Image (tube, rainbow, N blue to C red; front, side, top):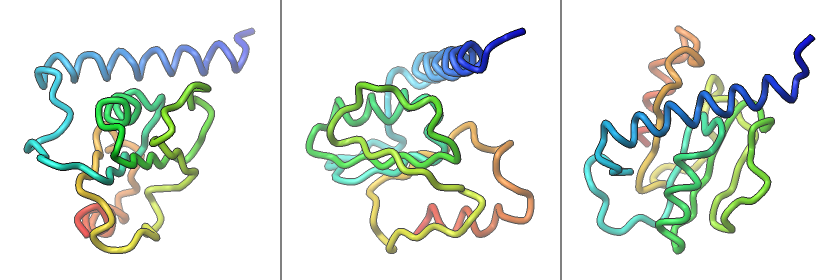
Length: 126
């Protein structure tokens, strides 16, 4: 029998591997297009928080909010400017319009309900 701790670690490792591959593909760039002055970032479906932590550490004056449906992979040692929140991207966002300079939404396609896509895209655009 495999323990849930082992499964969590395997999933965290898988997500970290995906993050490293995307870092290589994107030449270690965090933002597309480049953002000159980033103050507030939203990471949708932060998973193991690799991207969010990387952005928070590289931009200490920026607030990085990560939302995910489950906090089970959140690392213990987080930068002070990274704020993980329990939230479901399949529900309308409660953030005010223009709250973020950048919204990261990658590898969440399988987690967004088919009938939520249009609303989700509106939410991340506002």
